[in-house]
Image (tube, rainbow, N blue to C red; front, top):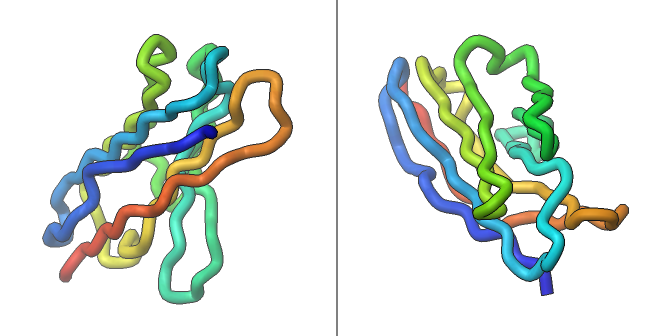
Length: 117
């Protein structure tokens, strides 16, 4: 059974930084696209950033220039480094990943990020 285990959420003041980590388990061949989505007060889940196995990234305009996404294929891990955080970045952040050669994606349990002004 595939599982995505997240860590690194928390509470920071505006302008601060957080680093979110996610490790995937249960996929013998590893993962294709891995990334992060978030749910804010509207409860709509939106893309933050994704990274492919080859390192190609997609970054939401709302966080571009403030977030960096990287991955370690050997560890099945994806890391989201968030700098210069703003109150509007507050939300639950979910790891998202496709096991290799699979069209069904999985979600992590979510980690809370709170940015105070």
